[in-house]
Image 1 (cartoon, one colour):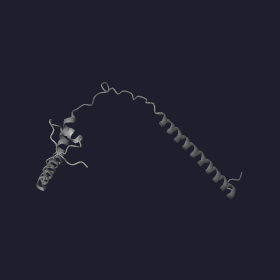
Image 2 (spheres, rainbow, N blue to C red):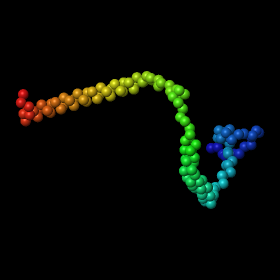
Image 3 (cartoon, rainbow, N blue to C red):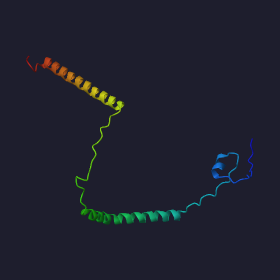
Image 4 (cartoon, rainbow, N blue to C red):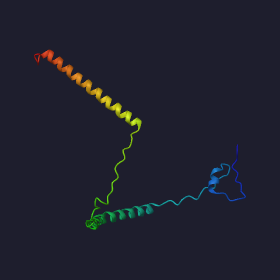
Amino acid sequence: MATNVRCKTRTDRSAKSLARDPDIIHVPAVPRKRRTMADEAEEVRRRIEHLECVITTAPAEHAARRVALRDVVPPSDEFVRNKPAKARRRPMQVQARSRHRSMGLLVQSVVLAVLIAGVAGWLNQRFHFLHL
């Protein structure tokens, strides 16, 4: 069983190398000063005040932006050059899925049409709607 022995090194070692070496005992870092409730309350108060200021000035900034953009003329069609969208090939899996889905819908519609025709024929045979 290994004992906890503190050993001095000849060279200064970085924190990363100390963390990688499990044989050396690490001196615990100084704990970070805990924030008091008053500090947290002050920070929350500052955040609330900031948000209130943003909310208060939002309508004025919106109106100023509208006024600034009122006299701006949109670019004419000569300067706007929209590139035509490239026709991208769909992957084979997507094509197969689409084909499978359309075949499934076709089979469903055929089965539904046959079912409706069968029910209509049975009702006609039973109640003689059409005299053929």
